[in-house]
Amino acid sequence: MGFQEEIAKRRTFGIISHPDAGKTTLTEKLLLFGGAIQEAGAVKNNKIKKSATSDFMEIERQRGISVATSVLAFIYRDKKINILDTPGHKDFAEDTFRTLTAVDSVIVVIDVAKGVEEQTEKLVEVCRMRNIPMIVFINKLDREGKDAFDLLDEVEQKLGLSVVPMSFPIGMGYDFKGIYNLYEKNVNLFSGDSKKNIEETIAIDDVNDPQLDELVGSEAADTLRENLELVDGVYPAFDLEAYRAGTQQPVFFGSALNNFGVRELLDCFIDIAPAPRDKMAEERLVKSDETKFSGFVFKIHANMDPKHRDRLAFVKIVSGTFERNKPYLHVRNNKKLKFSSPNAFFAEKKEIVDVSYPGDIVGLHDTGNFKIGDTLTEGEVLHYKGIPSFSPEHFRYINNADPMKSKQLGKGIDQLMDEGVAQLFTLEMNGRKVIGTVGALQYEVIQYRLEHEYGAKCSYENFPVHKACWVSVEDEKNPEFLEFKRVKQKFLAKDKQNQLVFLADSMFSLQMTQQKYPSVQLHFTSEFD
Ligand code: G4P
Image (cartoon, rainbow, N blue to C red; front, side, top):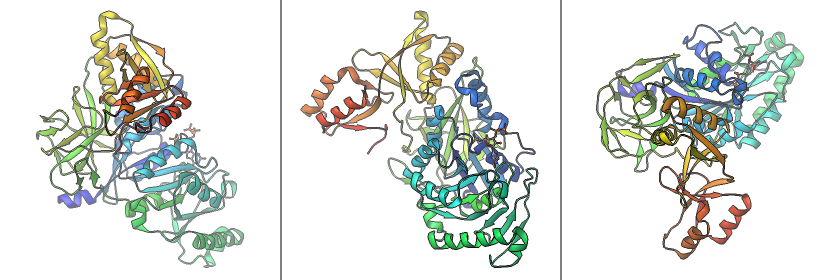
């Protein structure tokens, strides 16, 4: 198979949702279709349990398994599908944001009863900003939930999407009879049997066909006809270009647990989802079908074995082929590196591969060379954009609790930050180190890992910060900037990239600062133009 065919064959995507909407269940059903797993429950057991906030050993366990579930690949209808795992737990939101830089499209799962929830809003916003094509799957139709039109409205209002229903439910909850698929023009009747893997659909080209009445009863058939008329009047027709540009989002209804409506979702996904997309580097747009290899690190996974500090760096291939044992340029370090055992992922296994193509993810063994966001190429100097840091939610001073181990502590902190576990800020005034995290849970994880992997001990001290803002200014000699630096000295720090950061202690002080020093620009993410 030629290079172009290999690219055209790949679909790399992520599933995003608020916890409990059914992401894990849907992932599992998709894998069943691809024949990648034999039975339900295989992925499920790998999920972070709900108790994770109070039981961080569970996180350690999860860390071990999640190497395997980071990328789940399978073949379906001759397409190679790579599902990138995105943790739903809000303490790992940053991990998910970074993974979203490596997907070519996403599926958004929404609970029919709960509607649009907080975590979904945040994640969809990130996808919308990047024009990532999205398909919405409204799940748990076997349960009593919101009216379909109300839900579609909610998705449009809260998520800022422009939806096009591709299927429509016939009844719901106790009265759930099935789904009319507008895309395929057929009816799928609900039996509530979760063991059923391949559903039988009944082709009905015209909803006025009396066969529909026989199948679902006249009342339900009439309601469906009215609903479809409304759909026709209110929503535009599906537009492939608009979907791919991220300006229109097709919606499916179903029940992942019952494996209902999943096949339709997958078949449509295969038809419409984009093959590996071109990607913007700081220098230029890189096309996926360029023959020279380039890729970037979007995730780093620490080894579970504390005796071996090697890590697995996950690289998304943007262009060209990645080959085993071929030297590639690590752009940030300006160093050539060769990889003798790159891992590819298939179903829940990883194996050594010789050649990988755009859209694929390779796992590279790393002894500390990589940072999240690093670019690898065949020689060209490229920097892939789009892995910004966001302001952490929590901030604490980190202190060395064992003076004999300060070197180990420094190295441990360094490497954990490279992995993206948290962000480090060094105060300008006194050089003290402050750790910023998305969730309070990470402090426990850091303390535990420093001790078990690096033999270092740390303690924390509260440091009240409302928000971290990255600072930029046109002219560094501008007197206003110099005054800002002098007056706010106590609140200024450098991040790991040596960028200046203002740690505002309250919303009020942030607003006052913005008013007082208008020429000093404060940004809420680390990447800005
Ligand atoms: P998540 O990964 O998005 O967090 O959600 P997950 O798939 O784990 O699903 C959350 C809960 O919702 C699970 O129940 C799951 O069985 C249930 N669920 C998923 N899809 C459907 C559906 O279509 N209909 C119904 N009725 N339930 C669904 P749980 O009780 O939390 O877990 P479990 O103990 O049953 O596995």
